[in-house]
Length: 614
Image 1 (cartoon, rainbow, N blue to C red):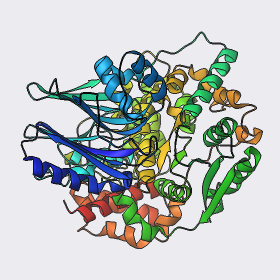
Image 2 (tube, rainbow, N blue to C red):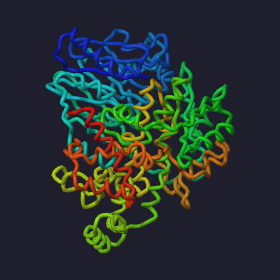
Image 3 (tube, one colour):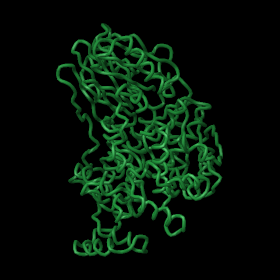
Image 4 (cartoon, rainbow, N blue to C red):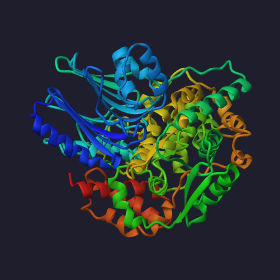
């Protein structure tokens, strides 16, 4: 695990490139405190910071081929590297290290860019093919590891975090208004956008190929749109899920440093921990944090699960000073990011890092197995007839803001896809309850249109499968995996997500939705597969999520900060309408509506803009 940086096609002198790489690496030292490496030659400069996990003694990067013609730096882990190494050695390749990194080099020599199809793991890769004067930048299938790009004057800069690119001369510190509007809708900036105009995220499952003569092209090498397997019996599905799950967790245990797991006591984290315990020859180290507010505290349940499984459990109950932590939390993401569960993720990562260097997480299960209650909210209410939808829209838009029933009418006017969008996004249009200045919005800015492009990629599938795939293409990489990566790497902890092993994920995504949600029970088929593995009470526990007392924070310790949003001098008013924002704040203050999520997004944006002063 580490962080990578680099430049392709740079005309800068070699000495300057070394200095640039050192500075860029310095900004991401938290991702790799154990070492640094550079490669600088005509056309390419690559650097990395290393967190030593596999081949601690000999795995420093860059790593090259036997003749040095292929060089690579990468961030992540390749879990099937031992099998790939044996295959490549049989094909005549000679290895100099015992690291997983080296299989990428020889795999590229043997299979070209198709080596990506053979890699099982999480990764952001930068590879230089000196002989062909070609570079390859690649990101893993589901977007577990990040990679940012800036193309400027014939040069391509890349990095694991935006802050490394911001050091470069000429960096366009100009906020992209489209990114702001999408952030206000989703709570994160979706790929390929970033908060900075002209800077992009390489999307999950894509690679960028570059050479000096032809320039760059971006290619999608993997897609989550797998066919639904309707021919499986329940027994066959359960059997295959058990086999694939055990295999996924087993390969994620590869490590030469202490390893543990996050444990919330929910289905997914409990499943990962229980499977780990069966596979390991010692008790698993598990970690949980709890809040003093009982409604948000999962620590007692996590402790019960830990006792039942037999882990060595570390628990810490906290009453965090959010007012003291919020600015550091906001700036850790380099762009506005408003998932408030980032705080407990950060705190549990801190706790785990006191004892281990690697922690397994249960993220991904809700997307794979229909675990979100919002899926049921859409599926259980069929579309209204077209005439009724038109009438509901007409009446709803004419009613005053805040009037009881207005939002219900607007939601009734939407298609199923539009109603799903309203469960994952906040409105942008003022008439729908949003705050964005009308001049910044396109004609398709209604909430029901925000996910149209993604839904178009899922045609032909049932609605449940379509909603899950949209989440896999958007919410999972944009929110969940971004949160886990940044908060764990902030404390130099490697977080692994075995439920997103691509063999397991592809099979799960291909299961009919009728097996995932049955009689109102979410994750139905996964719960059946876990019987006998996890404690029985876990399988019947209602979903809680990694929630925080956001309403209390907004009305309590952060009240003085939210008051700043009413100041006409706040930089949010470059993007937000003052009257619409004032109405949101007033309704929340008077208790007419709970706008804490929307206010949190505005506050994060305000703090980020004030700190960056773009």
